[in-house]
Image (cartoon, rainbow, N blue to C red; front, top):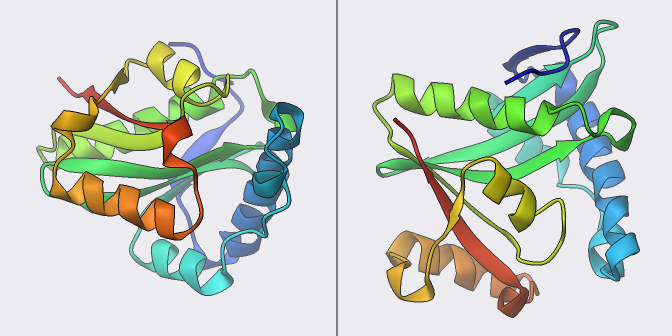
Length: 175
């Protein structure tokens, strides 16, 4: 896989927190183009959540040559898998395979801990959501195959007001 060569990847540091929130907000703006104004208008994650994830070393950032963060992936270790909570890249850096590289960073961390699966939940029809993840080797998880952890995640999404009828859980097995 060929990625943008001028990038480095590292675990997020406390000084990255505001940049992560900015990237999340800017990336969310794309949802206005698919009629999802609620996502586009949503504020970024609370700073304390970002700081907690940074402290737990559960965010990896993509850093440009000038030192600025241009993307991030946030994940959560779960029994036997890592759950990808969020993946965002600045629109100015779209199309450079940064998202794919960030997913691979999480995959490497998972493999290092003998974790054999990545999972996520995303929008079925949004082009840069489920169709994108399928190109990266993720497969849909059928409703009947959701385990208790993923069902709890779905219930949390519903409680936050997400329309789960438009979403799908996906998994990628790691060799």
